[in-house]
Amino acid sequence: MKLQAGLLAVVLAGSLAACGSGGGGAGDADAAAQARGPITIWYSNNAEEVAWGKQMVAAWNAEHADQKVTA
Image (cartoon, rainbow, N blue to C red):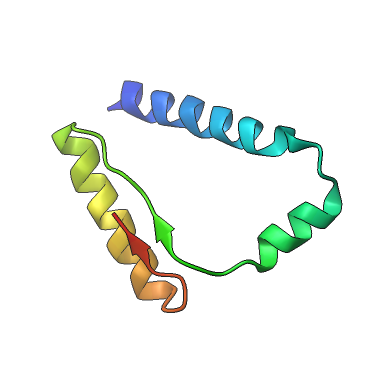
């Protein structure tokens, strides 16, 4: 489980780095912070990760009625 958490952290860090490399400046960040719309994610094929993902989607949707996640 610690390995999965570590891998998840690496993947998220890489994703954030990739998203931040556009060089668009603060205007893009401000626009992104204000953006609303559908959020679609995908699950891995690992049973434990799928269970965790479903819990996270349910928790997010319960707290963010205006930003529903579809998985």
